[in-house]
Length: 106
Image (cartoon, rainbow, N blue to C red):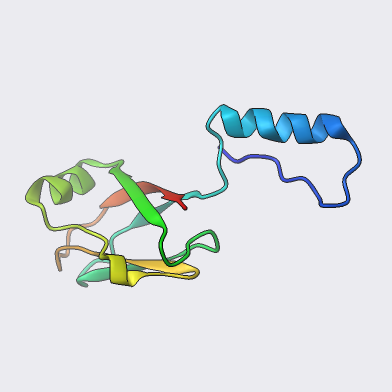
């Protein structure tokens, strides 16, 4: 779930309070999903919230994605976390529906 954004020029303190409350409740705009590219060994995920030094946390949302994790063939190398994107390394497979949700921290 996303969090409300507040303009730097906003004067209504109630909107600031609401945004802070949503952040404290765990909402974030630094989340998304990706599906591993079929017949390729990597998938590039574009996200404006990503920056060098960010930590990418991901979780499988399909059975095929869970099997990918169980096989130990999926990871995100620190060197592939860049400003605006990250690269997921995974098995080069024709298997479809390897879908994950992710959160970016930092």
